[in-house]
Image 1: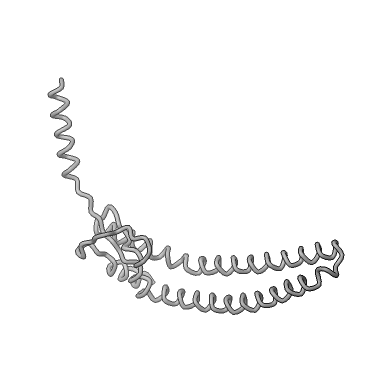
Image 2: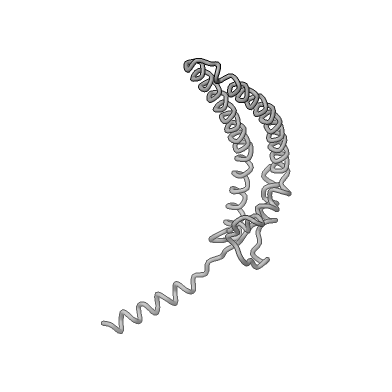
Length: 167
């Protein structure tokens, strides 16, 4: 019985090792730098961020002036007036933070269709190439989940071609 189990395990091991996994990788930086809708979305996002940065700077200056004014006049205010002013300042600060969150969410929603298109193209190329897994080479300086890649398995430009055809 033990010999039968050992033979079975050997046959199972051989059949498992015979099944090869095909793995490819993409360089998402290349995709986003060469895919026209991604370039446009990144430019729009940059404009949005620059506009918000200017608005935020002016709002911060005005807010700081109000805080300084409050601190200078605090000693002359009644406790009730101090509390009202502090609540008003807190509400204004929260308003600025909420506007910043809205800008971030808008930026994310601008990029979501691009990320969806890239994912769909990767999936299509992976199925076409009969790949079991596709990794992302990652962005330099950020956590790379790929330490070595044979260029033979780079499907970045196939994905880019698929993106350009799917416009």
